[in-house]
Length: 258
Image (cartoon, rainbow, N blue to C red; front, side):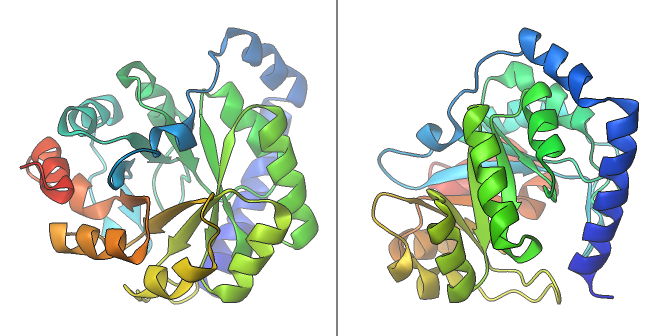
């Protein structure tokens, strides 16, 4: 069983448990006290490349990064450094995340992506009820019908959908489903190998009116400049920020503002 298959299996089991603990009706009641989404995609538009700063405690490829991090404090540091938006890992088994981490970042004020393995409409509603502004949809994890359904469910709730692709056929599927925010993952989710040139390879196929985000393997200012020249509108950075001695200064360094 490869990494992605294992993660999807555990996600399905967790979703079914969540449906019992907090039925759809309970999530719908929470929506009454949730603020309007803050426009994740809008925050990435404008002059120059934007940075999405990620909060995660561990990864399947590197193991534990920082189990004791304070999500709210880290988000505040990212904001101080100039991050345009946040990404919060909420998958509990391999990434050690939770929706509590997402909630802890809300006071910082930056639009926030819930990064998880979203495979069910329930999770879309759960994300909005938890004050997420965007969700991640991984093309490799979804059949075409499910991808289209989840995109529509996000739109109804005012959530932006960041649609992750890894190769040209997945990009075609994402665009046919109506995706307007494309995230190119340099890391292969089945092997965890990284191809830093993947954005450059796929960027020509991304429409001019779509947002293009680069994921994984971004560690230096040179990496950011290369991806910007390749056509990326934003980069999502996780491990190098979580492990940085001064996360705010690391954000500035990546953006060329140090």
